[in-house]
Amino acid sequence: ILPYLYQDKIPSKLNDQDAQPIRELPTDMADAAITYELCSGIVDKDIPLVKIAQDEILEECGYSIPEEKIHRVTSGRRVGTSGCKQTFYYAECTDDMIVSTGGGIESEGEMIDVYYLPLDEAKEFIFDESLIKPYGLMMAFLWFFQYSPHLNGIHNVINSKTN
Image (cartoon, helix red, strand yellow):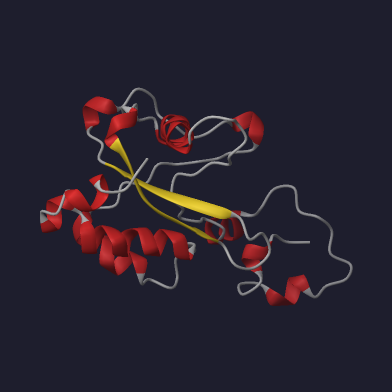
């Protein structure tokens, strides 16, 4: 049985009732399973959401960003199987904030590679349908292009939101 990411890639194997679970994916299949996602985490502690965001940025990406530099953008609910609430944050990071390689917690099954996307390639990236990515990532990029303080000089948009 193959992960759901392969439903549109290898439909003939998904319909094979004799299929055995796959413990290690062949290279060509593993390459097709790469997903591009925002840094994120679950709310499993009774602490402010901005602190959870800060912790996840450090754990997954390796950046130590002061809490006051992490700005709330918006929140909304996922529609479909979970209905969970998602809150988006914006933070600017620089190379001097790197304190580790990130990558998540391997013992929890996380296998995260930090992907640095040049800004001049970002619009093409978000509309490239061959890359597996959630809509939330696309929304975050579109928000950035509309409201980024450096692109549009409207820093008060993010500062007017409460953390």
